[in-house]
Length: 456
Image 1 (tube, rainbow, N blue to C red):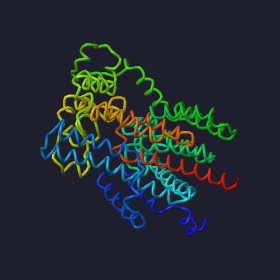
Image 2 (cartoon, rainbow, N blue to C red):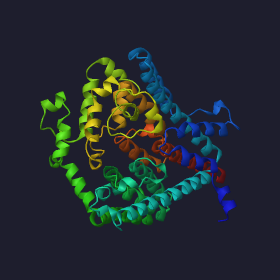
Image 3 (tube, helix red, strand yellow):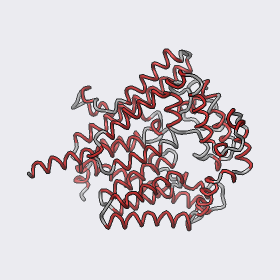
Image 4 (cartoon, one colour):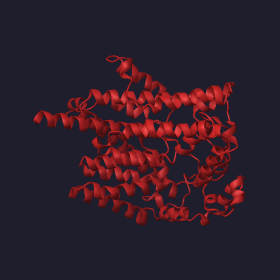
């Protein structure tokens, strides 16, 4: 395709927005949001900032109510922390409206071509990450390297153009793999699956495999089912041949009794009422499971905690971690310059788990131990009211017209699972891609209906 024709076939602004806004650099995101708003306001007005999930409006208002009336601490560190947390939700709202504006203005094919362009760049970048690791490890298969910097940690380097934790790259590529299956772009679906695999986000890969298996029954075309079988075969090949150490790691993780002495000692250092009461319980083997118990314990302490939670950045969030003084955490330039703020509820709960795990070598910094989870954030910081808002005004937004959706339904299921593993809304990347896929899915359905009606 001629370069001029190629540019005409995509939305260059949307491509740049995706490439820059989803990068894991906090300071870059508000700049890109402002640029995006200035661009779309050339032809639109504030009235066009509508139809976003009301969750993005109600959840920060709930946090504001908590800040003023439930947890009225107006100290400078707390105020700065609250404003940053509030801005995360505001940027989520604005980002949704920016991508919705572009999807509404473009033909569905243009948005699809733009996604293809982003995927191609990320694919090349991710394979470049792998090549870099091969060179650094001096091995054609760094996944089996004896060097602790590589081996099971090789997947951590496959960050793609998001430049965040490698599992973010995995989540987005899992979305693309399902999307391309539904769009009958089978070779591209395989390419997306390969990127998802080489990130070695083991527990995310597990749910992705389950989704692929379900697609064997949902997709009836022979080529689609053959592609899915090849995708599953790639997983078998990777874990049995390329990186069987990761398979051993998964087996070890599923059997908490095999935690080594360092893990056991670190977790035992966390003195909690329920761990003392149930010293041999299975949840004591996993830091994340302990964090869920802590969240439940916190909510049960008072009706105020149960209904409202601790407040924005006050219990369990990326914000709470970044503003704190936990040793071993590398802070961005922004968070290294703002005052340290350790929220009281965070300090007596998840702070201890983070500190214990960060005291271990990097090889132990696993999602099975970190408290990072949107479930902990939602319940711990916004309480039962926050959960209700999420179910009605976020999930409800995407499910209210579920009959008109195709590929975005399995993506929503995957997103709900991925939310258990990190504070994904604060990254402003994975969720943005899910919402774009949803808007495209709905657009294609509406276009199909119009075409059919015109044909009649």
